[in-house]
Image (cartoon, rainbow, N blue to C red; front, side, top):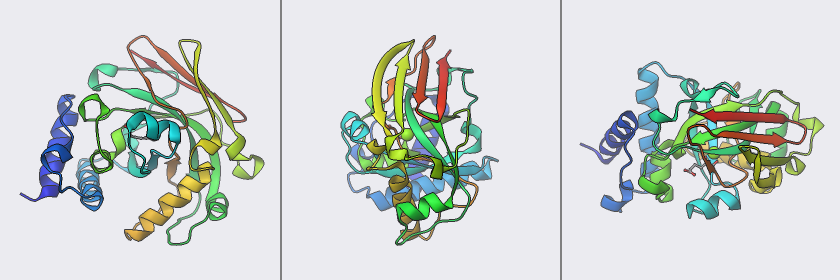
Length: 258
Ligand code: OOG
Ligand code: MG
């Protein structure tokens, strides 16, 4: 059994049983970031073979708030799957998840294919059809969200569910670095941020993604949704709780734990 197959098998079983495991790197300190992306590719291929579909990508650990919360300072990326779309405001059954958390993000709807090297923020804005707000529900397969960059990459960057906001806005109409967000839990304000929290500009994070994918012979595909990374620290989603993110210009998006 190869390292890739072994790690993919473990993560698949963990997801199926909703039981957290120790970080992969605890028993496998040799696992590199390149190995971890190979595990992510393998898990992606398995999900596609089972009938799921890649609809985009997501940046992780692009803001200081997220890097500080998770103790990992390297931005990373994962895949978004069709099966993970969740309707705004509708109850999310948390029993199937391990320890879900929610984070507010700015989402790009891509009109053109983009692959590095050399992709800039301006290229990203030109290739973007529209932006909207979103919530990502993350659910690390590792106990206590304790992981290295390699662990979290193998785990498809803790991906679980995504929720899209109410309106799509052409990016030229906004300075996304100045778009503010208020994060509320049960009506109480818990965090605030602006778009600049993700690498200085949300489109800068998307440009970095295009360049990382290009280096691996891959691309951001036309029609993809790209989540540009949590703007604030993530908050726990528990049964009965209501998490709302309200953005300047982009409206508000919410999810209920049930
Ligand atoms: C890893 C996923 C990070 C983001 O937006 O920063 C992420 C995690 O925090 O468990 O999705
Ligand atoms: Mg995220």
